[in-house]
Amino acid sequence: MPTNFVATAPVTTTSGTIFGAPVSVRFTPSAFEFHYGDGSDATTTTGGQSWTSLGQAQFTPTATSHVYRERGTFSADVDVRYAAEVDLGTGWFPVEGELTADGPSQQIRIFEAHTALVAYTCDQKPSSPGC
Image (cartoon, helix red, strand yellow):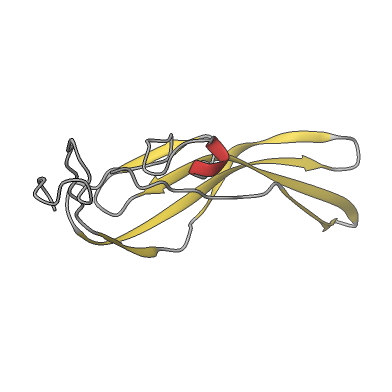
């Protein structure tokens, strides 16, 4: 079943002074690198959304979800790549390249789930498969 990952990263502006002149630098998220901990990775342009925000039922695939093939404990993280712009008082100019901020690892445990299609619920027919 898909495990949905969601990350947030705001646009951040920092101001200061260089050689006595005011300067502002704006960092805008440009990519999210999802590392699922099982050797699989995905890069997206957004941090994803919850199933509720997407209007989807839980455990449906999303652009940032991942299906683990094995049970176990995995160390997952999301790194955010930022594009930068600088303003020296005359407007914003893009800076070549990107800056990557490494996200903290999160230990997650994956369990095994079994489903079965049945004609009746266990209340309706206690002898049904899986009851």
